Amino acid sequence: MPDDRTSVVVITHNRRDELLRTLDRLTALPESPPVLVTDNASTDGTAEAVTRQYPRVRLLRPGRNLGAVGRNLAVRHARTPYIAFCDDDSWWAPGSLARAADLLDAHPDLASVTARIVVEPHGTEDPVVRELRDSPLAGPPWLPGPALGSFLAAATVLRADAFRSVGGFSPRLWLGGEEELLATDLMTRGWWLAFAEELTAHHAPSAQRDATRRRVDGLRNTLWLCWLRRPVGSAVRRTWYLARTVPRDGASLRAFVRAASGLPWVLRERRVVPPWVEERLAALEREQRRSTARRYVG
Image (tube, rainbow, N blue to C red):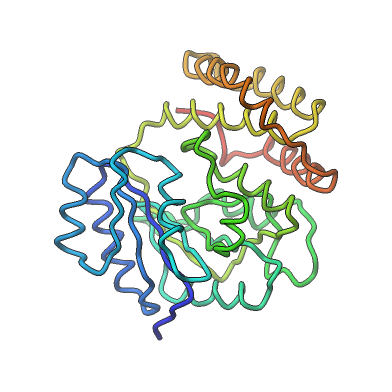
């Protein structure tokens, strides 16, 4: 049945064919969700193809590559209470958006629900799902699944008002682990995030990705998050741990140099989280050290 509670937001950059495949699936969903695409200055004919083949899709063309902030632009145009994010190489399973909206309707203190991720073309479960399912965080009994301390933008439905209340994704972080700062700010405001086993998102990893740049940006953003929100002791320990464990190569060096170059604005905008949020971040940090699904490689 059609469901008007959730809009789907997609950002894309020079992945025309993958985006068109994703739009095939999104526009065929039984929920018939509004779909908004932010084209981050593609030069491969993406915008023209979307306009020609999907006239009902709302296409936004900011004229430059906004990275994750392209999602903020789309959310400003959305008129539904909930926003389902996905990437141009991922899509939602039929029925999952309606079920996610049901969960958010039923739990007003819940900011987001993250789906189980199935990797295509073989239909295998993404290794990160096990970590979501086994989250070390404790939450209230009403949560529909394990409490999370962050989320995966390609497989999460968020409450639009909660997203807007913390300013959306940070322009400073651009892309690469950008969800963690947003999630931390949501928790600081008292929101809960959860994993919902009954939701499914599919991911067909794009071959058109710069793994090294994503590693540089992801490591830089991790360091910035530490110093933006964590107490000094925690930030120092996390920084030292990363310095000892990331690959000793040019990419890691660039990440640390770029993180250090941002210290002036980081210190100006630093807001330490309350103790209960720091407890959650520390628990997640201990879990991430044992992770086999999240590594700074590439």
